[in-house]
Image 1 (cartoon, one colour):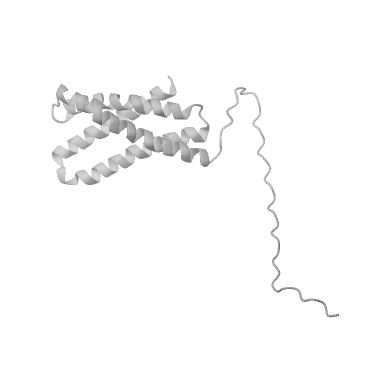
Image 2 (cartoon, helix red, strand yellow):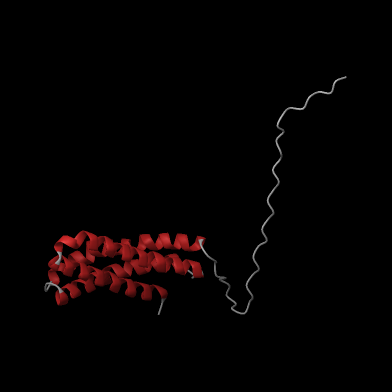
Length: 166
C-alpha cells in the first residue's frame, strides 16, 4: 500500500473515533467537555507530528507530498466515518449531517493533520540521524564529514603597549 494511503486511513479512523467519543461525552458528561476536547486535540496533533517526525528521521522519500495527500484524503474519509459512527453509537445522526462533515469538518481534520505533520517533518529532519537515501542498498553508507577544529580567537591586549624610552 502506498505511504499516503496508510497514513490517510489510520488518521481518518483515529479522527473519526475521537469525534464520536467527543459526541458521546457531550451527551453523557457535558460539563467535562472542555478538558476532553483539549486532550483529544492534543492526542491527534501528537499522533500526526510524531509519525511525520519519524518519517523525516528515517529519511522517507517524498514525505512532504505523502503527508499532504494523506491529509487531503483523511479529511473527507474521517467525515464519513464520523457521521456513520455517530449514527451507530451516539444519537442516530442521519445523512443530513454529511454535507457539514464533508466540508467544514473535512477541512478542519485536514488542517489538524497537515500542520502538525509539517512541524513534525521540520523537527524530524533536525533531530537524530538522517537515513541514507541512495538507490543502491548494497552501497555502504557514507562516512560522516569530519568536523573542523575551532578557530583560535585573537587575544586582546589588556593595556596599550608603552613606547620604548629613548
